[in-house]
Image (cartoon, rainbow, N blue to C red; front, side, top):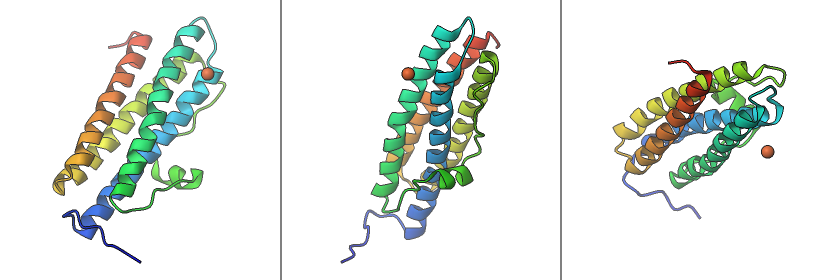
Length: 159
Ligand SMILES: [Fe+2]
């Protein structure tokens, strides 16, 4: 039995929003994976501070994955769930275990800003369909990634 989604969105609106959210999900997953990896592999005199900073950020991103994915399901669409699907969708590159700590922080700063830009694009899609629930969620994600970026930038002592 099929019961069509009947929440006032055109089908194309739901699929467009879900596609935009899938890109946000892929960025979030890639950033989560990289941040957790750098939590493990960071070295140097700032080890303890960065190990802890990265943990706070990857835990926040991990929680967000479920929120984003379940919003896609609530819109009536399937969620991408494989490494290969995420790799195709995200603009965020893999991390490298042997980078020095400053390079790790600089990469994560750049990647959080990439995520913010992806979210801004997704927000425009949601806004054009009047999807307030998605817009609310994306505002929370923007705030989180801008906060992460601020903390990473402050760690590097750059303006
Ligand atoms: Fe840990």
